Length: 250
Image (cartoon, rainbow, N blue to C red):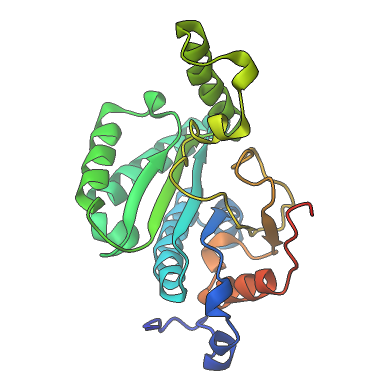
């Protein structure tokens, strides 16, 4: 089942420690540290983003192999437009390149969905997103949600706008509003809330990622820059998750 031969692969003993009955269904990943990884090597930041994209495919395939059903990967935030234009342009070019190379993006079994505000993306990128989503729709593997021009606050605002429309039209009564009504109107409405959020690179914050879905998430932080993140690191995050007592406020 585990056909991974990178030098950072987990040992067979480490893999045996995973409880297949307690694997998180939904994992969120904040792919942080690409720029720092590149800077340490005297490379342009775009090289770090390219290396990070390759790691995402490897981790996605590995995650499916151990039973993860959904991954949401923070690819480009609503705040990332503030970065230098050259870096933003390079990120968009890389995104377009990977969307066009569907197998390179996430493998042959993975279903791909894009969440976020697509209105700011180019027509070409939006066309390729539609093509990729339709191309992978009938697959039976893990579902990879790519969060592009995504922000947790923006997601909640758009959900409330949808609810406001219902109130204005009379199909929703304000006194009947529930949490489920909001959950049904966010981008990830078809999947369970995120069980585990992984953030490498040494930062200890959510950065506007999956704010609604992470109410009872477990967090796993490390100092590893994302391009150096290995299957072994992912395995350790899973094992750490399995050793926690999730009480959901009880």
